[in-house]
Length: 153
Figure 1 (cartoon, rainbow, N blue to C red):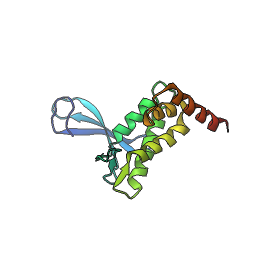
Figure 2 (figure 1 turned 30 degrees about the vertical axis):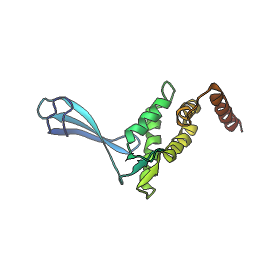
Figure 3 (figure 1 turned 90 degrees about the vertical axis):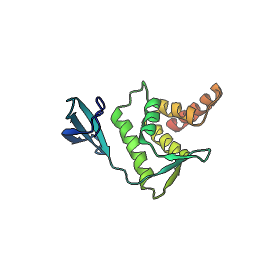
Figure 4 (figure 1 turned 180 degrees about the vertical axis):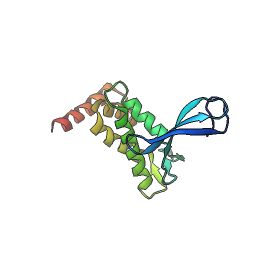
């Protein structure tokens, strides 16, 4: 593993343990050249999956992009990082175990919407505003009232 501080190619694993959701391994490493310590995470990747964008471009599924989107939607909300990690890991698992080599970005968006709806209503509305491209305040009002109707019903 390359050291992020000095770019030396060799480091030693000092400690390994599973993360709280058991979806990855957290490793503490020490660079054999400069002695700096850093953390890496190892996750299982079942298959390479391409994401098909709305313009038909394809790119590799990127867990970090998914995690950034969910984290941004949950920003300044009382949502523990552990719950965000569980949601992202669940979506990643669904994508990788679906048996397909490609998945549409809209399908991933719907999975995020479903997960955020159960996690936090404000994060759900925030994500929806970008995902569904709200352009006016009325779009927010209509969507928020539909969220309220579902929560009340």
